[in-house]
Length: 247
Ligand SMILES: [Zn+2]
Image 1 (cartoon, rainbow, N blue to C red):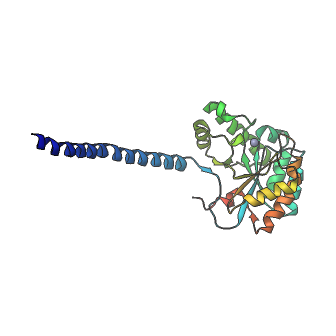
Image 2: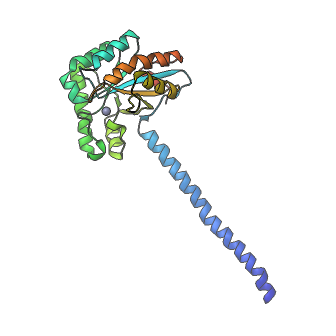
């Protein structure tokens, strides 16, 4: 009896281990598979971009929070001087106040996107409230310049289930950014430009601002940034061109 027990114990232990493996490993694999599947489904279902998938030295310049008569005309002038296209993510209330600036952006060949009506923290709003923010901005832009923006950037680049759902319902492509121009620790335009030039890579989406608060520094840094990136062999394109190979 003792010998049988001696044989049985390791066998039982082995069987127990096999049983544990059989029950745990497949479950982990299944869970992993389901997680990956749902993540892919989410990304696939919601049109959202952080960069252009390209090996070419192209970048997109984007300006949020305008139009603002203090900064937008100066930025348009610089972009015209360097013959560079950009994309402006417009705040609806500013569009209503300064429709002529939206028309100037479109006339100069720039692209416009939706950046909500009043620049709220969308994570704190309900789905219908977010939908209203997007729809009212679309209407303001249509009334100002006769175009419908296909791109949407949530203020503060916040994301939530409701933000994704509202964007999808409005048939927008969400565009986030990869490098921000404004940096409060860097005082001079040249330092800001050096930072952007150091961080840049093919397909990067550069975020700058032309409204809401004092953007004098951004306007001052813009020519430096353009020159620094051009010196590295980069070409500026609209977001639509930058994102054309993404899917
Ligand atoms: Zn903003």
